Length: 268
Image (cartoon, rainbow, N blue to C red; front, side, top):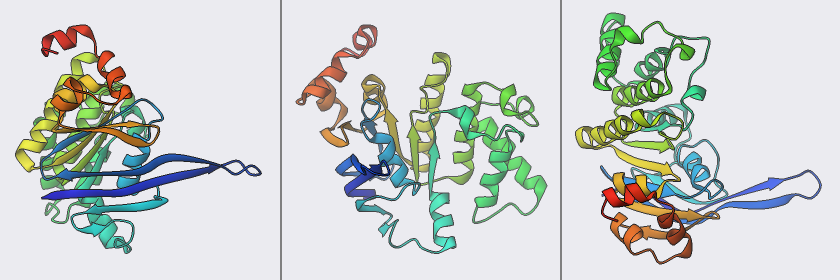
């Protein structure tokens, strides 16, 4: 069963006051994400993958096309505050820059308290809420004593991303949009972040859209890969098909860019 259906999604930006130059950032993009599936949008900077993600998250309005989540058009049928709030509970984002995801003037656990407040069935008191927050931190491999009361500048980028995944664990979203979640953290933390996302998929049936420029990483984590270039999907399919038998020239360039050591280890 498809959890998300994207149909002919298009986004045109108009730049300049006098020239009114039009840039088609996303061009008739269509794909589906099934329940419990991890799909990757792969492409270089400017390929349209992040713009696509922002439209799915209801952060920017599409110029054309439809986004159907759980049978509802998210731009036409979600109008009132409650339906949008429910959508925010079910669809959650993990962004590329873990430092930009936090307000530097508040302790880092504030984002977890916000998640608790989004819950449809909230804990009965503050003590229960705090226990839920502590449990979420333990689930992502963080000792609550190392985090609670600290400010963003006092913890690492890897810990920040783990807290965002702890937020997902609290909310139990049906869909996570992970936009380059490992690109700005150290290599030793990346494997742990990927493992946590896979655990969410296995334990909660969460679907994940994984956005990356790294085709090798996409091959490792994905059930399906969609390669984007200049706002269009130029290749799609199972990771083995896309990586081992690419047909588009751009896909072939991405395959050639996979580090040789990685390719050797994966038998590529």
